[in-house]
Length: 157
Image 1 (tube, one colour):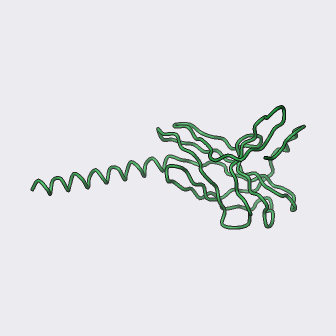
Image 2 (tube, rainbow, N blue to C red; image 1 turned 135 degrees about the vertical axis):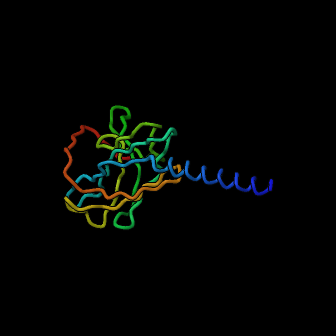
Image 3 (tube, one colour; image 1 turned 30 degrees about the vertical axis):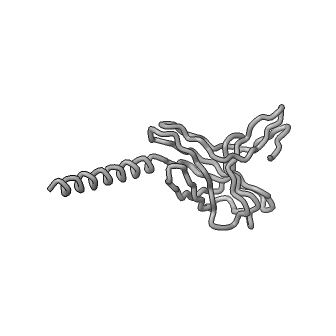
């Protein structure tokens, strides 16, 4: 009898942990994913979005990937270095607990490098996002016009 009770309590505990993990994973929300339209010979495209973390734990976006069509996909951040704006590859993107991270031109963004062919305005690109809590999200980013940014000095690292 005691073993049966112990086994039941164990199963309930495992189920609760599973529910908690599922709930925590469901707390990442992606809004307005988009890619800035570019000319047909563009060497890279920028991917932008709003990532909201409704959990009580900080989460990191570890990677973005596409099935095909781009040689490299990287997480980037534009930062000032000695008076020059530089796009710097990042190992991850932090999304604070109960907070958000905005990927936008001139800030955090995802680079889609060396496209086989540049998607046209109105088309969608399927992207897989992987987070450090084990969650993955599949998004469909629409290609659209973005504001043209002018920088006196901008370098890509």
